[in-house]
Length: 212
Image (cartoon, rainbow, N blue to C red; front, top):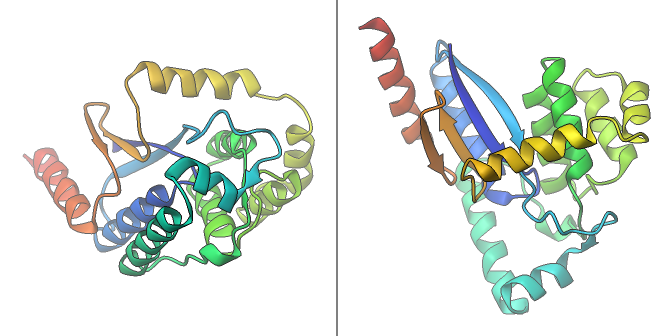
């Protein structure tokens, strides 16, 4: 098996779209031999704990409503091509995702990591839910097969807070500067939402090396 490490944030639209293309490629290569591991990387680590009004935040970051409208349109078009659900009009909050990353870490211990990441992305991008809220995180965890009550208790504590911060700091120290960033076999790093064709080529090349 070859490890594919992915540094991502569920509120990043290109992480959503990049995952959709990757999953489309994996579906075409059922014997792909990739083991996926998601790693924490907050798109905005300065976000207040309660999050922020999304429109206000986006306008301040990108320079006004016209710029935000252009970005939204680009995301919607890319999501359409990737065949992944997006309802930007439903998104009212830009959450702090630190607790979401704690949940993703716990999910990795239970073999539910990709299901949880997919659930977080869907909750935010398709349903407009606040994935910074503990009750939403517990629901996503339960839907992925995790123990809802246990997750709720962990979220109410500081469990793995230091671990999650250390993992993100390690990623930045390694040179990760954008999300999504994919690291193939701990050797090759690729930034951005790559298309399914790219991943098919990667899988085929890795398979050829293995067989050779």
